[in-house]
Image (cartoon, rainbow, N blue to C red; front, side):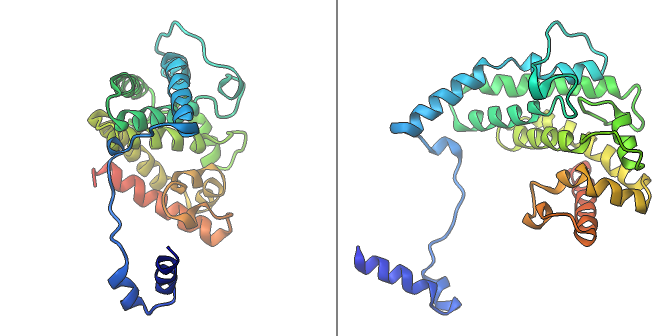
Length: 252
């Protein structure tokens, strides 16, 4: 063991070419290949699974349906999901990601069903909003005027792009991890809507938005995008978010 440590330690100081020759290849493997057999991590997995199944997708969808003027028979959760909170509805994106991760784990039909159900309901909300949103593709638990206030520097809009980022991340996970192709279509329409919105907003107002919650759109990808916002970095984040939305809207 001591010899192994010495050999591995030596690689850290070896010339790059030599280190590359000995470096083990890094490969991805599916979550379905991983099983936790026991101990505190298994206990945490069991508890997390039970907690996720205890949550009601319809209550998490409440703000999306309400914004789309679709009927619902439930009530939203309280706290950060309360109607009086600036980013009510943001939890659904987190929940969709969690269900997609569980579905990718394998032998989790119930989580796959929840992913499929949530995505289908979000698609209904997007279709309903298309009749009153201009241009079509908008999907969010918050009214579109919240975005307009932020984009044009009027203030009082809260953090709508923070909430939208969670929804987009959930849709991406539903598509990539749970293989839900409808999630890709919903995401493409939303990305196209954002791309058109980005083109319509003037330069000074772009800075207002990017310094606010607009930077959340880029937070999942390059690490530099989550750094504190100075003006040059804010502009880079804005350009990255624009390229990201354009790529997704075209299916690339």
